[in-house]
Amino acid sequence: MACNKRLPTFKKKVTILTTDDEFHWDESGWNYSTGVATVDFLADLRNTVLGTSAAISVKPAIQFAQVRTDRPHAGAVITAGSVITGDGLTHYLETLSAGSKFWWRRGLRTKLAAGSFAQTEIELHTAFRSCGTHFPTREIEIFPFNTLAASVRYIPITSVLDTSGVNVAKGAIVVLDNANNKLDFRLAGRAFNDPLARGAWVDLEAGWSTPPAGDSVANTGEVSLSGLSLSSNQFMELGVATRKDVDGSANSRCILHITPAIKYS
Image (cartoon, one colour):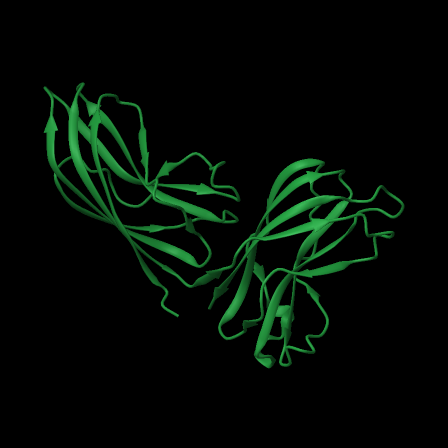
C-alpha cells in the first residue's frame, strides 16, 4: 500500500488586526492519525502588506479530535521551527504527537508582533506518511442479553482482513443512550486461515471500559495485536467484547458507534 499522502494546497488570504492568536483551520476535512509519525509543511507567504511599524507572526498549526470532530481539542502552533515574519518559503518537519487522538487537521496561526494592521496571502503545502487503514463506523445495539458478568458477547466490527504487515489496532467509540453504568466493553480480535472456521476471540485490551449513563466517547489508543499470532495466520478480524459489569446488576442497553483502524509496520 502507498503510505505517502499529500493534501490539497490550503490557501488563505488574511487580514491581521490583533496581537492575539488567530487560528484558521482547513475546513475541507479531517485526517486519521493512525500511523502518522511526522508531517511536512511548506508555508509560502506572498504579497504581504504591513501597516506603519507593523510586524507579523505566522506559523502552521494542528488541531486534534479524540473521537468526534465536532468536539475537537483546542488547536496549537506546531513545535518545529520558527515563526514566519515575511514573504518567502518556510519548511517544517513536525512530529505528530497524536497519542490516543483519532483525528487531526492542519491550520495556520496568525497574529501581529507589532503595529495595528497587516495583510498576507498564504499557501500551505502538506504531506505525511500514513501507513494505516480505517474502516466504516459500525453501529451496535446493546440489549439486555447478559445475566452474569462472566457472559461475554463478541461482535465483529470489520470484515475479514489480511494480516500481512499489521501490528496495531485502534478504535474510536461513541456511546449513545446508555441506560446505566453497568456495561463493559473492550477491543477484541482473532486470526485464522480458514474463513469458515475462525476460531476463538482474543481480548486485545487488559482492562474493560465502563462508560457512564447517557452519552459519552472513548478511544482505545494503539492496541498491540501480538496476542493474535498473526505470523501464523493469513486472515484476521476485529471485534468488540461486551458484558455486564457486575453480577446481578441492572441489564445494559445502549448504542455503540465504533470506528476501527489498523496500522502497518
